[in-house]
Length: 226
Length: 226
Image (cartoon, each protein chain N blue to C red):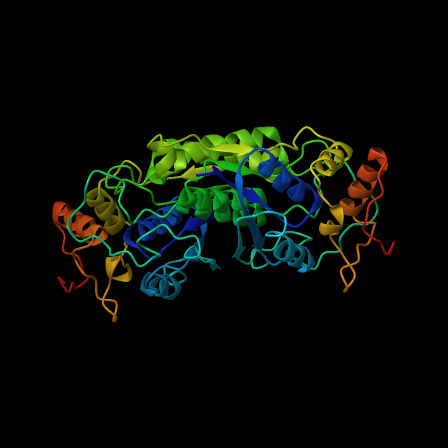
């Protein structure tokens, strides 16, 4: 049987590249997305439409509501900043988000008999989120092997795979293109128009556009520039 | 302002004792429960009814569905074992459950400005779950301080508090009674009757009854003995 891997897949540029990398690494990818009270559901619609066409064996969407907790521009009614990427941890930070996502991925991996979890975090263009750093990932991997029946019983060793962690956005895009990723199948904007058109001005759009420019490639998406 | 703590609270004997201990430790307790596709909702109803009367400032129920993942007698249609507590990790094990629960607690703690999270895990009467052991708890605490804005920025140090971890069930019950806990306000059974009456034969009922017997106390619940 082909080895399985759980891939955290949002429909965005990084996680779509990760999905292609998991396939290239020889895994049968199981894509996992979250509906967690994001202010717009467009990214999730992109994920639902594209997971299987991109090669996922299954696509599991876990539904929960972070809005009741409060605390982030992505789930509350705080304005998404449009003035550029700063050095502080931004207000778009969602408390414990990647910890929650990886916890669900760990549970699903154990059910699937998988020991590999891909997450498209990045420590260079990482927007200042603490749960995108290598030390966070290492700590979660240590936890995973203590938290689970299959880890404790030694049926395998859980690995949190972060192939993008030391890559620039430009390098990620070039690597994805080399693997055949069509980036028109991805969505990055934090604050899209009602038809899904990206704004081009939020942190996420800015990092994406800078990445394509530095890679010497043209982003296939269109932008409203609003 | 009184210091806040998040208390993982299921409505069961252990977590109800934990809630009383958090109060006794001087914290304003914020109770957190999960609706995760448990086969019966009675424990959650007990939690909803009793959290505030027991002193919780707020009670947040996070809703998600582990059934879609499969893998446990508590959420699937596997029979709950009634033949006594064995030495292996039992089929009632839910993959990554405490990791998922603590991740949500961490997110809520960060929103609340709390740095203390109570979880009523127990490494003696622990039914063989890997995510109830001290080494799991230490690994999560390390993760918490790397995963969060408030941990990384040094606004405080997250502590995962496990006051029950080295206590027998009898000691837990005696400690709770000393703090004024009325155990008729708790529910433990994995497989209750439709009116909520406990079976008395599942692992959870057996551990509870053994605890009361060893404490020399009478369990205020009634049991069907089915």
